[in-house]
Length: 489
Image (cartoon, rainbow, N blue to C red; front, top):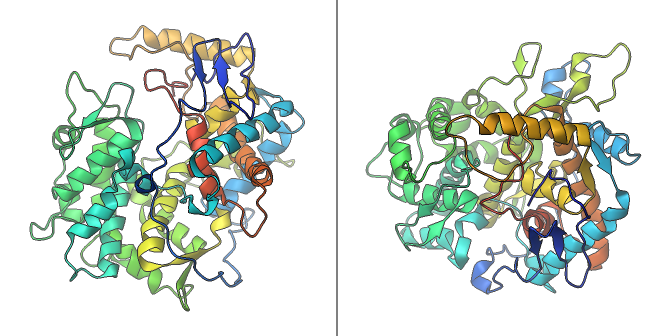
């Protein structure tokens, strides 16, 4: 996938073959992307649960009064991205040209991927989350882990343990780089990228690497995380000169800072475990204890944003001295005269959203917990979802920005130790190009959900959720070539 590469001809897509071509260098037909369709490859589904009763949710802070609180809220992500997306509808973006004639073809391609793997049983599509990454290759590793625990471990403790595992696994789930791979100690098979990090984190968890209690190896706690070192994590990830991984020190530092954050007993209990957030949520005054527990999504969101705040490096973006996290100024944002600093900022909170989606899985499957306000969550603004918009010709990087990015790549390529990859534009994470592209990804994913359900013939009662479309469609539709990253950031 040449995400920002100039193309002499547009990628072509049709609903029969769903083939994308890019200068002849990548022409992946629907058959080459086919996923296994055995039942064992699909995540186990919860039985049908009752409809969540309507109940008012807590609202975001007023940005005029508490702008930092507003920009850290889940409500702000879609609201702010929508302002950038509105400019796309009239092709008034700063860095991208928009060809809306490609939108129907993009939706048709996503539908072809979903039909390939799930038709006609669309209800079996799991919500997007880390669970499926653990099951790479059709092996139900989480089910096997659950089966390894004695019956004396009740459902609450099983859920706590999976929350422990999933949280550290998501935190390790940053780009590993094209050169890294992991050989499973259980199967001997080789895995790479996000799935490789999932398998590696599971095997580290079962070995007790994250536990400070030798009698309870299958848990994560503050004591165990504080014992980690860069070298120890590198050995567990099989890192060597011939098998390098990007950001090893950063990953180790993140987990060690998590050990400090877990000392917050309000959220993580006296024994300082991530899994104890289950008890906090179940006992929260906003949780409805009806036939099934119903947790308010904003309650869960605030727990993650506040409880994990100490683990993140200081953000470049601050309002009133408060670090906003994954939120960045964007030149495409409108502002009212006289503009306030917060009005230029677009929040994404991608990793917290990925963590939210992922932790909802164990809680819903094991404890039958439901979440009110799930529709506040957005599509994840990352390169697989965003790359789809580029691959299909819906978005094209403007020439001046393309030239600027390639010049930055060429300058970076001359540095010793830089990876040898195909020439792609290079931008920093806070570059206006990247911020605009991420905001557009959120907006277009919402539009795609409506069109995808329409093309599948599904209505509001049985239509796919956004999390299902991410899992079965858009995340697969722009599958990267491990040897050729879409862009360098």
